[in-house]
Image (cartoon, rainbow, N blue to C red; front, side):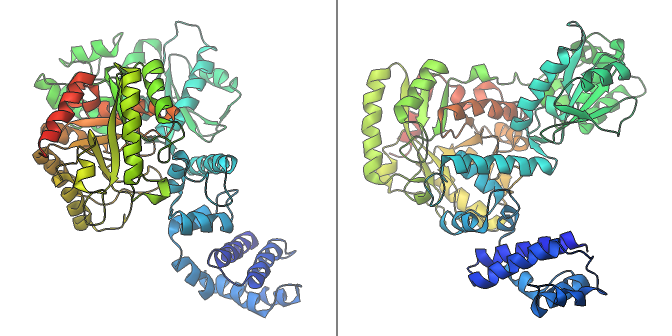
Length: 562
């Protein structure tokens, strides 16, 4: 253990002391000790630890802690504080710009216990009104979180997309316009998280290396082979460039795009033969007696079986979406007013309807609506529906699923909404049986229209709570409840791996942006990506219904509560 590691440990110890309200004088003394340990002119070892007594500001107590740290890797006081601190809070201490004072407010006042929850809270604009925070601080924290996640080597698809598209533009400018270049690999399959962006180019290795060296935002890495050139973007994202001969371009594009399981199934079909070199992927698949598989589908689930049965779905596209459901306005924790959101959907996005779903009253942290505010919003919706017709705003609510599975608000209020999105936001640490039963009780509630972000996961930050997916989907099928594909790129929940089962059971899915500002509506594209991976067709998606069709759907659904 070197001096730097020792100093870092003592710095964290001092931060934890402050976080837990320790004596401010002792906390400051420990912070000073951490600084001094990092600046020592000699290396601290079991043989030199006694020399610490000679350093001003490092007393016998500190020296003893250092000795224990060298011998055991820890010391009791530090261990005790770590045990009393959630792992996510400890992780926050390593984020630039977040000191113990701010973290204490985030943890104790806002109830946030992980970096993922903090990132999501920034998206929901929840930090702005907390003591000592503001819009600028919130944005700085969000940027620091993005940097921290990137340093771990994983990127959300949404974050990688912007970097990848800009890099592709730069690369294309360095080659003739008719040269074959394409994204491939996980990025082309629209995987929700990824470690690299792969690009295949019909050029030699030397030609490719020369071109990549011209892109200012990329630095070529030393580890490469004649068939793969690696470069690191300034953001930390890895690019992998694959040089190929032009005649083999589409064969290699097909191979590099498919998951291992998709390729294994193709190999089984090929037997001893090889994939042919033809002038398109469509031609290659046709030569195998197969239809063209959209890249998102090439995961090796059941796509080949569907193709053989001639039941491969015509996948949903962004253009199929007719409206947007589950969105938050300034009535709760959104940034834009209800009217601003409605006009943006109508005039900019050319949608037919908006489903507003502000938080229910149990979500105090998000300015959840009490009954008076609910009725105030209903009255405004009635006025706007007259003003904006034929565009329509549907009266919705994101009703918290309480700990016992019941919904927020009494039945007479729930009955007044056009639709209800039921979601879990609290008590996330139940075991699988309790968590599943809680959701099933909410699904059985006749006022539940849509089950919102079923697992509560936050990608790269927080695992979803454990659920029996099959029981949840079966319950939705039995009670006619739609399941949300939450399109926020941090969620993308329900996971695409369960879409096919939901479809088989006749359950409708709904691609909901969970937008808290007008720009958030654009997240629906990420929900579409996941739906396509899951084999969703337009008729499987609730918000691909026209305004008249969805109004009739809500009407029929409400009649079941009568």
